[in-house]
Amino acid sequence: MAADTVTRRSPLAHLAGRLARATRQSGGALRLAELPYLAQINVRLDPKGPAAEAVRLALGLPLPTEPGTCVRGGGRTVLWLGPDEWLVVGPDGTAGDLEARLRAAIGDEPGAVTDVSAQRTTLLVSGPAARDLLAHGCSLDLHPRAFGPGRCAQSTLARAQVVLVARDQPRSGFWVLVRSSFADYLAEWLLDAATEHVTVPE
Image (cartoon, rainbow, N blue to C red; front, side, top):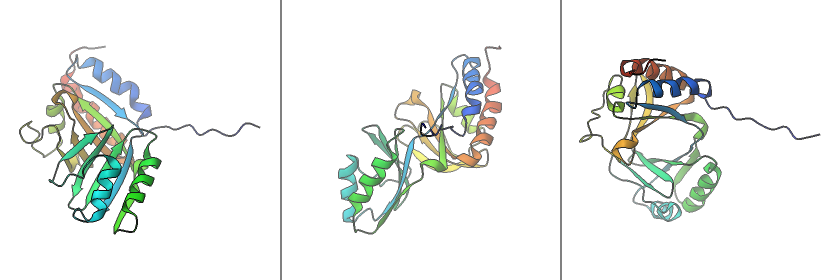
């Protein structure tokens, strides 16, 4: 008998069509999409201890120490979440390897590595109207001078707790990392707010 197969279904799979339709209707002003299954590994350690250097070598990236910043390279993004906390985001399918690599790097030094990939999904919000759309529900100053590429922040969007990331190029838009239990609510809010930017009726 053939082995049972597990079919993954992302938190927003049922809204993929509506997100794509809103993108088309915006006439190029917006792009809305889910980026499901990104690897997300939470790391806690002393940024001045030997574990930080070991993690840097394991990732090929430094742990950012400036509040609200992130670094990218090798297909990974490392987000500053606090003085001793970071989130390492990588491609789908890499969570197990990342977790093992980081645990090995920390070794017996004080620290913690936790796979939180299943806790959140990621929404991509990009296009010329992306900042205006997000500003409707977020208290952060999203002007490029204040929140340009390489910035990240834990905040609220439409009252939902999120991690907001300005991507590496101005036109790349934003990642909105949201807990899976709030993903449907937040996506519906974005779809509703996006109606202001509809230019191409269907």
